[in-house]
Image (tube, rainbow, N blue to C red; front, side):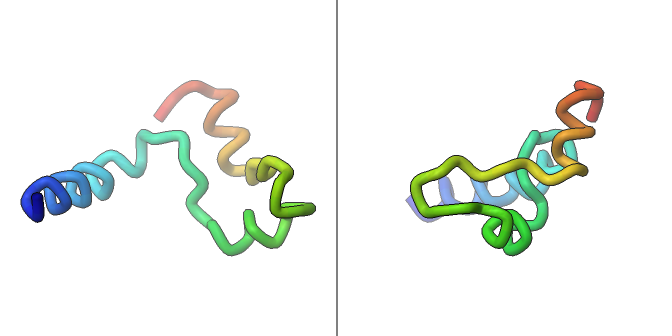
Length: 54
């Protein structure tokens, strides 16, 4: 089980540049209006999603 965690961690670190994921969680949490509303994407994440290039 522990080896699965390490594989998942390493893959997450290696794939971070190509995943459409928020890089600045603190700023995203600050932009969030309430606990139940969906978070708004940052400008950087929106640009990356619009380009559809990694």
